[in-house]
Image (cartoon, rainbow, N blue to C red; front, top):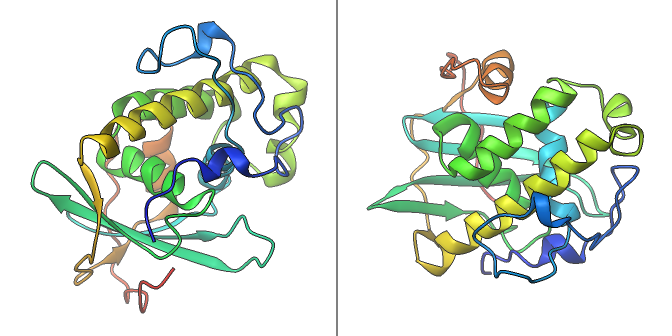
Length: 218
């Protein structure tokens, strides 16, 4: 399976109120990376990934620059998905059988941004959103925010476009590739540290002493 970015745009929006699949992104919110003058659309898979981080549903293990991430699937079957990544040369090596799904690449990219400072354009857009919603935020409180608050809706549209074009550029340049990741020595990142990093308080998450999760099959 490959890393599939387009699946995020084919997914129905079934988390947030006030947004729909392929909702057009206004020109003042678009990434400068994309083709000039083209229509841009919202990807619900990207919004779902952000929601999982904001609501504290993403579990992270870390050893240096290596991450393993577990999160609730956005698919109808439910369950947990697992993805992982590590440094490789000048780029990143990604692992996980769900990287062709609507949300898995985005959970991984957004978490890399938060924990490792990867993908700076994505990180800036994500922190703008987190500054508006707070983190962690209850799922029931987060779902209606795009409908009730235009600033939250615009922040999600901005994040979708900036994350897509930043990640697309890195995939096109082979700065992100797929392969096996060595997961030895991983330890859980405390949720409180992850939330502080998400909000931009500059605390670097430190792995807690605990037994690592078994396996990495997504």
